[in-house]
Amino acid sequence: MTATRASHHQRVLLLVATLVLFLVPTPGQVARAASQPAPACEAFDSRIWAQSVYDDDPAANTALDPDQDDLACEELPLGAAPALWTDIVPPGAIPVELASVSDGDTLDVVANGRLESVRLVGVDAPESGGPYRAVECFGLEGTAFLEWLLASDGQLFMEQDLEDRDQYGRLLRWAWLDLGDGEVYLLNEAVIRAGHAERFRDTPNRRYVDELIEAEEFAQYYGVGLWGACETGYLPVFDAAPMIPPTSVPPTSAPVPWPGTECDPAYPDVCIPSPPPDLQCRDIPYSRFRVLPPDPHNFDGNRDGVACEGPG
Image (cartoon, rainbow, N blue to C red; front, side):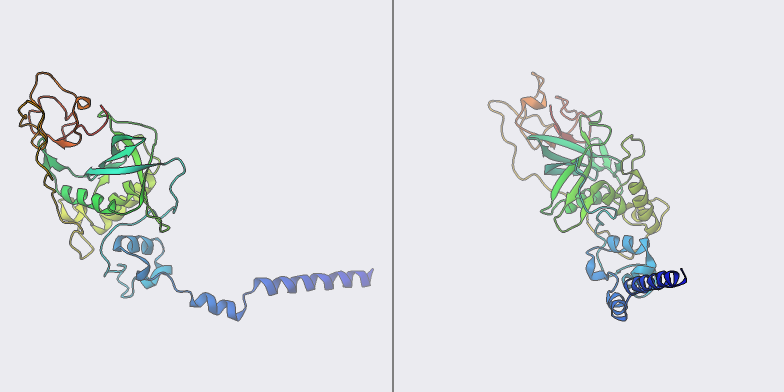
């Protein structure tokens, strides 16, 4: 029995020694691990992205803050940050084609062969103007930022939450942009993180509300976008001018005449006759055109200065 126990103990010690050889890293493994640097600024194309990664774990990302002032990659443009919690588009999102950008929280897409107006859920961007609304602080910048972000060759996707449409017939969606480079952008979150919109709270569509809250806190803390440029009580931390200047795009062509009629001045960029008869959007060959008061055909149901934005 004594010899048997001794043999058993020897086998246990041999097993433990073998496990130690596998579990304890060799000097070469330690050297290789130490030689793998943390991501440097060259791995990012925007300051907001780099700062977001740095804030998540400053100790592991010291290469992003060489002067140790807690501001990452200060030489980069402000830009935008991709989703930090995922690198894939949700399987339930459907691909769409971008038609145009209306303002900082609304865009037009072609989905299933139909032109649809889409309101980004959870987002409230400043107004960019129209005959019924004044231009609000940072409204033009918000529109230009969304246009810039969507000016890539990436694929746009729409994801539905609880609600399908709002009272104006617009689709209510989470919008995803996949650039095909391993990073995806949740536009709703990206515009808030970059300070071009604040969070819209009165909505039951809350699938990514935690991400929106964190994005807004980031923008407020650093005073980026509207938080530093407008009277919000927040001060800008980043020493940088707004990334996108206000822009306006004039009409590209003269109104197309409506046969045998005069054009109503309420629709200066297209040619639509005055009533009677009373026309609806489905009766005319135009969509998304400018409207001036008094809008005799009531094409602009939501009074944002743009007519026939969606179906109908």
